[in-house]
Image (tube, rainbow, N blue to C red; front, side):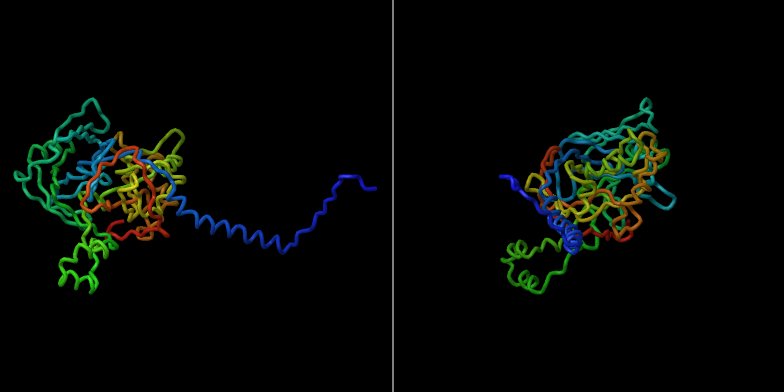
Length: 379
């Protein structure tokens, strides 16, 4: 007998064919959906500048600042000096990877001077300081040629009192050189000047008044050579706080990786995942100033140094490079070197702008694939 309001439910069997189809189609659909949404997620990620670093003397300890003047050649005063060791047949460029004792020199900077504090192997009680003009008078200095990573430049040799002070700290003869207004060429193969096409050559030669229009519309700025200071390969190095946390997670509990060992200029916080920056092509600061992230930063043994002692690190902290080599060798142009951070180029032609901690940053371009290292002989 039927009871009023009673409902009868019928369960139908699902065909195995439909079940198998769903199990195959749904994962693929999710995969393609995530690939479609990934660039959008990157662009909508609200990042912030958490730290800014400047290195007036290359390879010495970083100067942490709350703001810096950004230029086409890097932050103002960044890597404008460098040290060279005197050898039997000339001079050898000094970099922290081969001279770990350089980590024992701390730098401070004001409007006019750099103050260098030397503490031998962590011995703060026996430290000594020295002051260097931020902008030496180059007319009184001897010209000196420097070549870094096959990219030469003219520079100026600082006077004897500066060289003598650094030599007394290192225990061997070194010289300090100043770059001045000189620059070096960027040698990445994909950033070399382009030959203008026939139409462009015709317009530039026979219709001079059209040049401003041609440069704006046809992108003749691509025919200019990118320039840098004593920075290794690019004006800016951008790193992610989220990726740093991943490196720290590989170390023993309670041990954090020091971001300054990666020598960044700009540290960004707010990325959803570690190494999300591998695919960033451009970032925009405060929705106006743009930095092209053209290459990965491939790493060397400098990240293993114990900054407190100025000697190679021991234990897990001395094996960070090996640790990252397990899964961060992602650049086929430098297949033996792990990647951490992205090299950047300031897109504002000839312009300057103050960049501050706390500035908003958005990803304005996401690359479809990984970039490939192409600096000849490096990496």
